[in-house]
Length: 252
Ligand SMILES: *[C@@H]1O[C@H](CO)[C@@H](O)[C@H](O)[C@H]1NC(C)=O
Image (cartoon, rainbow, N blue to C red; front, side, top):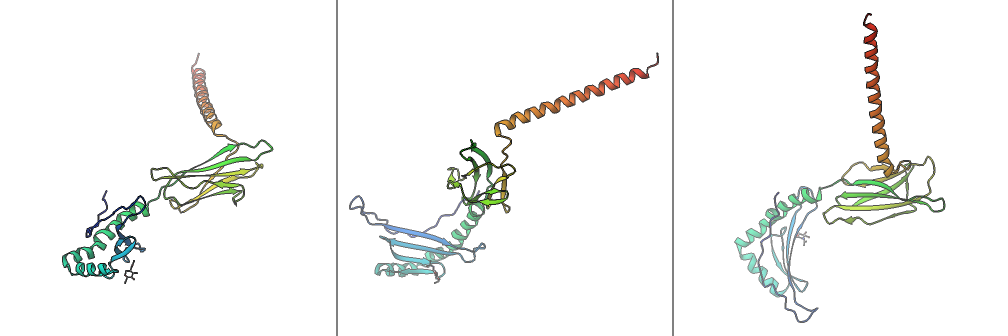
């Protein structure tokens, strides 16, 4: 994997003279690569030199030279602009660093998506008096922006819905949980719809109230045993039929 390229710039006095716990003098340099087009044709490289938040000197790749904003800044900019070797290097940064790194970052970060794992589960069952609570969880998705909607018979439900923020896992994935309070009605279909950059279609997971998760395993084991039993019974029957048919054909 290619790694980003670093900028090269003039090192002028990096001073931070503290006069107290909260006060100090700061010199800072801000390098920016600004673009919005996907082909990077509008890429601009800005290099700003600041002293106590006030901009002294700025290089703008569209302009192609340094501009000073204080007396000291104007003098410094003039002298840097005369340094042809250095100016050639700075003017090239928009290609060498900005466009090069943008290409890496676009594919590695901007255009990167990871589909969520979606699960609908029961948090609380209805006891007749209180409504039931369902939870729709989306795990391990990227990027952060996501939309979780509850559907009742395919119609979006907005009341009695509470949702967490997208929570970072700390491994660049996110998770989110949305709760729905509802009073179960027979024949009503409840679904969770998730819209995310990783899928052009909304992802819909239906809630199956008849089968609870713990029962699903028991049903699966039961069904497997039943199928196995039928196979053995059928094999036995075929074997028995063949044997008895063979016996009839044998003349006494
Ligand atoms: C850079 O210079 C161009 C042309 O003068 C200007 O349009 C643009 O706003 C400048 N960008 C910044 C961030 O100052």
